[in-house]
Length: 143
Ligand code: ADP
Ligand code: MG
Image (cartoon, rainbow, N blue to C red; front, top):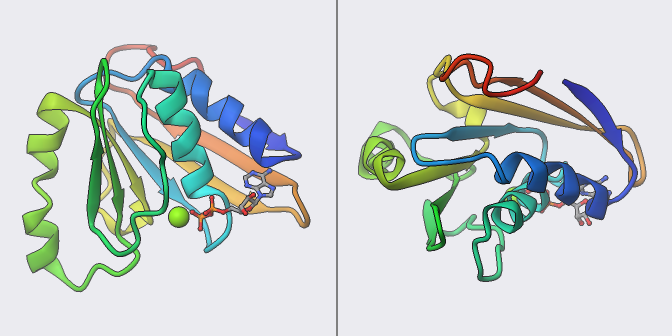
């Protein structure tokens, strides 16, 4: 699925619709340059999931966990320095208990089951969002 948003609010709204359908074991990989809107998208995911708390960029932490009806773990791999730190992440453990959203998700080994969200700036406030994947659980996602 490909669509263009014209404001951060529109990007959040798209993400919230996805968030409503996320459950434990779901992995969302966010791909896009600095300032593309990855954190903005995660903010929408959290809203859709009914997760409270302020979602900010976890750039100085590898992962931030937001409790909710379904837990959301927000990971940022921007400053990841090699495999050792990635091992500390315990992605499988996080996926056992909740959904996981990963900024700079292209740095993870691609899982076919993951939902991939590519965000590209089209200038000013316009962003192209391309959502693919999520083959886990036949036709769960409508793209
Ligand atoms: P990233 O996490 O990819 O570095 P952020 O979500 O932190 O990006 O920042 C995106 C910036 O772009 C914010 O300042 C946001 O307000 C702005 N922005 C403008 N238009 C959009 C849009 N259509 N979608 C998402 N963010 C947008
Ligand atoms: Mg960010």
